[in-house]
Image (cartoon, rainbow, N blue to C red; front, side, top):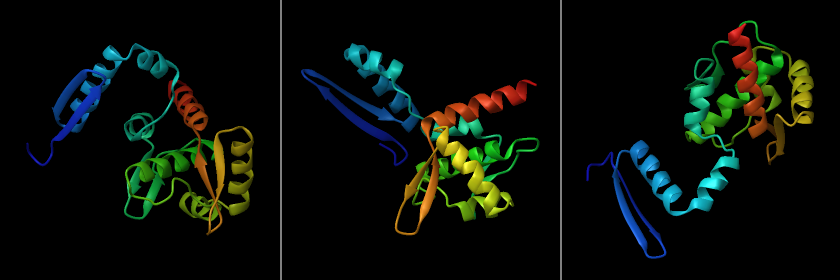
Length: 166
């Protein structure tokens, strides 16, 4: 097996299966195996909503980049400040999922600096996003961080889809 290949062994009761190959094909093969052999898992997946790094890249890849300096919004002309903050938080979540950041969120000061907007404006929009359930405030030893929620990702993706169809 080459160093770029993944190997997964699955056991469920008397069923056993082994998969080897690249990460994407293994992911799909294991999901097919589980869906076929665990029908209730298939049903659960229909109502379970979770965004991974691939989903975030597909939804927001045209608008964000992960740079050496951190997550950045690179294309947001004509977007509201709330949408820009949402994109910045989505970029931070993606950066965290890709192990480029230690926390899935950003401080008001980081968002303000990255977007070139006053901290007061960012704070006001973040309060709205938290109230709407699109962002979450997390307290840690350094202070407060803000991260995008699952519903925030849905909201932002829908907003950007509407904007691009106009």
